[in-house]
Image (cartoon, rainbow, N blue to C red; front, side, top):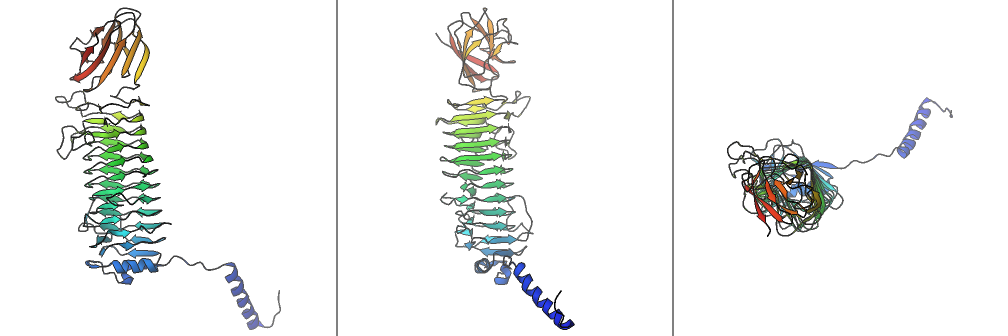
Length: 481
């Protein structure tokens, strides 16, 4: 329909009408601006300081591309809200240096500088993706702390003070997503996260801790992450942080404990493997898989603890303990479904247990619960109202699982009870408040005061005894007057 003035006029009217309607109904949306650091003068020869080129690119564009197979010297590069610094490269495992990486662009720390990348001004999100940062200076941080909603993906950070954050622990990183990345050969891998996610990350060969969480470093989720060969702790939680969780992680060959929980308030550790930690094998927080000091509300579920000769040649069977507690008491600790095993050796360790004991120090006295853990007795501090097995003998003797066991019923003389497997350092107390004497047996081939396996040892009515495992499957008894 319309007025036909002529073919040419009709065509002209339709074009004008379409232009007006289409521009009104379908506005053109501008995409984020992008540019290459090369376009702003970056040389990438590993010698020239390219900081100014990086800053110009990031100031004038949302996205800055970094060309692969080049080495850029840069320091204190300012990443702002919304910026994405993207390298055109592939992920590499481990702690390669600038001289060994080939595919990814390398950012070498310029001197003097505090950080290679300064993200402290990011409060609404930014991203670092696909780059290799080699500080080559243990006083320069790879990526600064102080950001909010930063994404780090497919990135390797080596040779720095802190890979992310700082050594002084003053700068916190909030709401971060750290994915598919490596932090290695730094003085510290990652420092002080809050409300952040760490997924598929490798923390290896750092000269201090793989991850350090100080006071207020709360509500972080760490999944599918590897803590290996760190010369401090695999991860240290210190000074009252709370509500962090670790799942599906591997702690292996860290020089101190795989996980150190000092003053921690609320942590969940699930389905994780602890193997050959405590390589230093000296102090209480260096010779265990997990060290606890004044920690509370801790849940350890699933997973396993393994002991083996460290393939670096250090330690006999590292570590000496699975759990180590110092005198500062921990509380509300739950351990369930956690498999423990030692290194089986026919001549030196036939029981396949730990070289000293599964637990060092005093276990928690409040809210402590252990269930479904082999080589560690299901634990309550005290069990009362226990009935000894009336027919006697070792096989069906009542198994005593608590630290303090109160036997109240022995319906016949020599009714029997049995203490847990003998692991050096372990002890149990038995109070016989029944009317008759009871017979106390060790488990399996364990003996008490050298008595024959099937004989056990008598404990008279009214007597209290503490049984100490002194080694080689033998319990020694200290009997009350």
